Image (cartoon, rainbow, N blue to C red; front, side, top):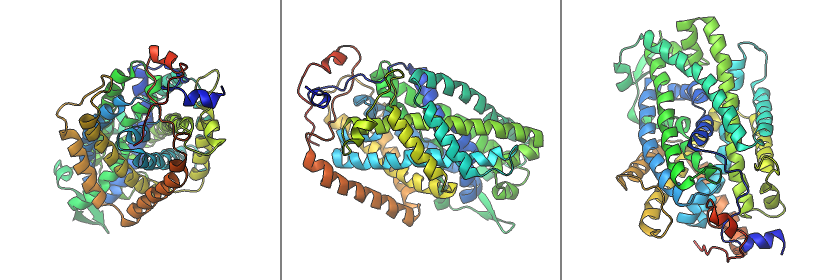
Length: 480
């Protein structure tokens, strides 16, 4: 029997990846993928530009939505702890058509997210290399982290944990400086203002909600803990804790410096108009030398965030290849696992190259706003999954159950629904077009080949189930 036939005859996936992570290792990689320092220095300024001091409320709204989403990710993700992330969950709970749309959304976003971060590297490297090309710098970063992403998951967790500790010094510097030198009244946080032509203007609530999509993007990534389900020990117990811890840490690490910058800025008008607002805070409150040192730490943060995201995206793409979603030989190539490092090495290299090409020909703002809309749609699918899985799937193995169900999915759905109404119609139509194209592929290629494509087997269970992968049991029946 050939390898493909053996996999088709298996009821569970085989344990091919290295199950070497505990909760702490998962959290280290997941927070590195959130890239909180890069979010504060690159993404938060976009929220400043859109909503002025309303960026504080935007981050608060995003945090509340994040709590609802974290509980939704935790329950739905531990019900089906398989590599792949959102699309693997949505397809099993809401059905394959929506699952494939979710996969396409993820493929778009996981390429755009590290690219948007890598493009910001040049801004901070310019303190020691003023003439560099930011697109070229970002592209090189993507290629380098693609090579590192091949390493064993435990090695990446250690490397990213060390880099994370170094980069958080930058966030701490902005936080301390801002709160020590408070130059603005607290009222600017709850009665937001911005500046136009030197004149102060009140910020409408709708504008705050527009910026909330950027804030959601900045906080996003805590749900990525589910992508490492087949590499985390005791996944049905551990993944929920990793998600909730990651969100809690991310909110604190991002909200504090954003608040400190708004309160500590000597001039809000100068802050909002500065090419790099956080550098303005560091220079005006701490001096040029401090800004130079912290800018180099931000560069480290950007590198770490890109590395973590490529590690993440390689698992997403690996899962799609393993399930034979693409024509051969592409599915077979993407599903290859490194014989020594037990990592999806082909998927890592492919996504790094694609990211490098995109980074070489893009600008930050267009990537961030577009990805924010994709994120809103993805959140809606996960929140809906958290509803359905509790009501329908009663016979699943024991897994995490959120408190106060269904309050948190309701909060998440209400929040993302309103945020969506405040987004650019152009971006919304583009995302709808992507979803339509995904459905064309699904019904033209996957649906006629059901049974041989998109295998969607059962989760890898530690211990006994690994032996079941070779037992010849019939495939799991999934017709959704």
